[in-house]
Image (tube, rainbow, N blue to C red; front, side, top):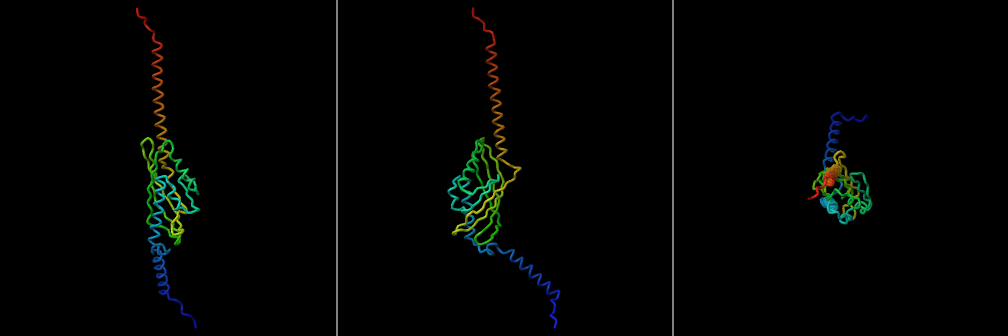
Length: 212
C-alpha cells in the first residue's frame, strides 16, 4: 500500500508555520533567550559607568575590579594593552604639552548580543572632548565594542575596542594649530627683536655733536 504524499496545501502550511516560528524566536528579547535578567543588565551598565569614571578621573584603581584577568583594550591608534599600569601610562602620556584635559561620554546602543548567560557583547558610540592649553576644545566621535563576561556575580570587561574616523583627527588638528600659533609668536618676537637691534645700531652710528 502506497503512502499518501503530502498535498501542496499541506507543504505550504508547513512552510508558513516554519517561517512564523523563526520570526517568533528572532523577535524574542535576547535576555529571554540567554537567561539574562534586569539584574544582569544593571550590572553591565554599572561596569560601563565605572570604566567611564576611571577614564575621566584618571583613577584606574576604580576599574580594576571590573576587568577580566585576561582583558584586552585596543585604542583608536591600534595600541593593545593587557595590564592596567600599561594602559594608565599610555593614557597619561596623552596629556602632552598641548592637551590639558580629556573628557569622554558614551552611549550604548539599545541592542546587545547575548551569547550566553555569562557572555554579552555591548556596543555604542562615544565622544571624546580634548581641551587644549590654548583654550580651545575639539570633539572626536568614536565607536566602541565591549565583550563582558560574568564572573563571581560581577560583569567584567573581557575585551574593549575603540575606533574613530582617521580623516577627522581633532588631536592632530589641535596640535598643528598650537604649533602654528607658537611659530607665529616666535616669528613676531624675532621681528621685534630685529627691529630693536636695528634701532640701537642706527643710534650708535649717528654722529654725536659736541657741546660748545
